Length: 137
Image 1: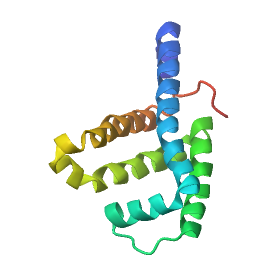
Image 2: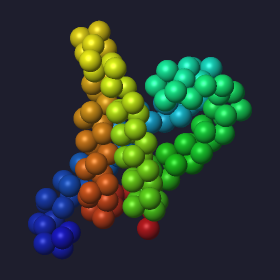
Image 3: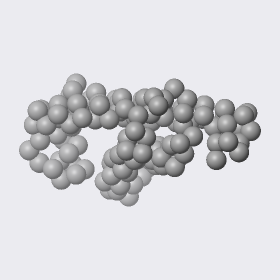
Image 4: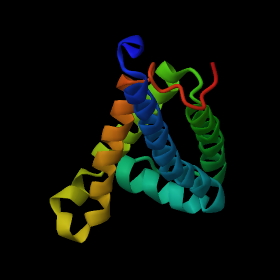
């Protein structure tokens, strides 16, 4: 498909996909770093949104380390089918697990920002073969 696009459209598409990848990365890296900076916050999130009790700081650190590896691979465009797919699924689970916040939407407006970001993750996954700007081969 890339070969059939004009060079101008192809260039704009590549820059657009890079901007989506950077935007998703910025949000996700903050959630990743939160696991190291405030592991108790992660435990409360696991309990409240996912029903997982008894999470420890060590669990937060291990999950944070795994998520950090994933997010750096995502940023680099490494193994896009896997990394973009896992980010899409991970963010989708996070978005859907917050369903109670959508019921009381006007008191939880920030939760709605998850939906366009999930859409961005979907676009990146669908167009992963065209997302080549500043990626590893």
